[in-house]
Amino acid sequence: MKIEHIVGPVIHTTSDRKLVIHDNVRIDLKDGKIERFTVNPGENNLNKETTRYLKNGEFLIPGLIDGHIHAVQFPNLGIGYDKCLLDWLDAYTFPLEKKYSDAKFAEKVFDAVVRRTLKMGTTTACYYASIHEEASLILAKKAIEHGQRALVGKVNMNSSKCNGYSESCENSMSVTEAFINKVQKLNSPLIQPVITPRFALSCDMKLMKLLGDLAKKKNIHIQTHISENKDEVLAVREAYNEHKHYADVYDVAGLLTDKTVLAHGVYLTDSELEVISKQKTAVIHCPASNTCLKSGLCDVRRLQAANVKVGLGTDVSGGNFPSILDVMRAALQVSAHLSFIHDSYKPLTYEDVFCLATLGGAEALALSDKVGNFEVGKEFDALVIDLDSPNSVLDNLQSYTLQEKLQRLIYSGDDRNIMEVYVSGQRVV
Ligand code: GUN
Ligand code: ZN
Image 1 (cartoon, rainbow, N blue to C red):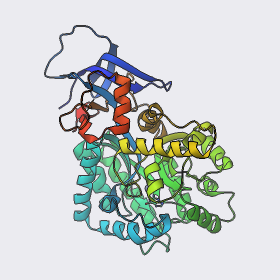
Image 2 (image 1 turned 120 degrees about the vertical axis):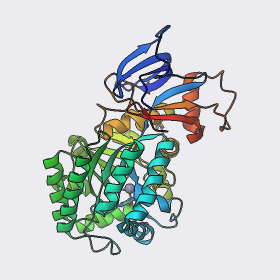
Image 3 (image 1 turned 45 degrees about the vertical axis):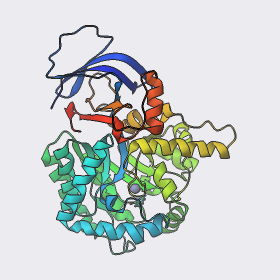
Image 4 (image 1 turned 60 degrees about the vertical axis):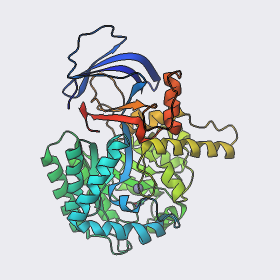
């Protein structure tokens, strides 16, 4: 059902990065977009059929944005953390991803993935599929079917060192072009293709350069991984020893643009941050994954101080849970741990991670003209939250302020508190 008005308390981060809390707002929608945002609207005579009046205790927040998630890796959730990144890829991840040559398997997994992430409040997901064209297209169609906003990438990898999971450079390019054309022909306002060279160890420079050219020609997004793990960084240094650093490899390939998202960035040096900032490229912080795979502690404040856009990612199944609420908590914990190590380090607050999960993610994905908060002109992607929902263990909340409720949602809430999910004004959960 498409709604035209929604009335109740609202919490969001405005574009000047201020957390704003209103007890009573009326949001008027037109074709799924926010047409008017009225604070303290007073009495109104709205059509009950198309108006959602929030019940006592409910409030509205923007939809959550998962800037980095491998849809194909869901069957491995919660296993494999006995190994670190490179061995984990070889032992657990590549063997699983090969299975997506089977379209039936892809269909079954992706249906569950999209429904589950929507239930967790992810209204926008930046997905990795597999190297297979058919499976990647199935993922795009599943997002459309269930009403999720998504960037979907067919993975590119032509290295012979990926446990037999690879393709030739020529094949990689022709399949990627075909995939992009087919996604664009679906003609859905929710879905965009994203060029997805997996990382510098899975692609050679020739393939990365061709992909960089293609992204430029088509003016589309790029996603890859960078500087996640110390062994990976060393291996990249060896494989590309004529380059200044890891970021330079991608820069020379033309892969760093204002529509590129780099997952992780745990070990980026100051000079790498300079290049990334100059190219207006974003980093997606994946703290749950970085802990599960023992990759390291990423310092978000340092990235932001270098003027790099930052969003959050679950990085399933490097990350152990497909919920951005969980990732917000992981980001708070990693940041607290950094403050134990570095004197005078100011850890992230729940307001900071709320911003990273919404407006920050939108800016990182270059989608902040469309989503991220409730400013007029944006799409209405939103969650109705109730901390006192019958299934929840949290109760007795009537006396808490909205600010306290936000804190409680972030530290202790889960999908049982997400009562409804809207994407472009359409209720999808
Ligand atoms: N680096 C290259 N591929 C992957 C992947 O699938 N997951 C993570 N976490 N890092 C990667
Ligand atoms: Zn990843």
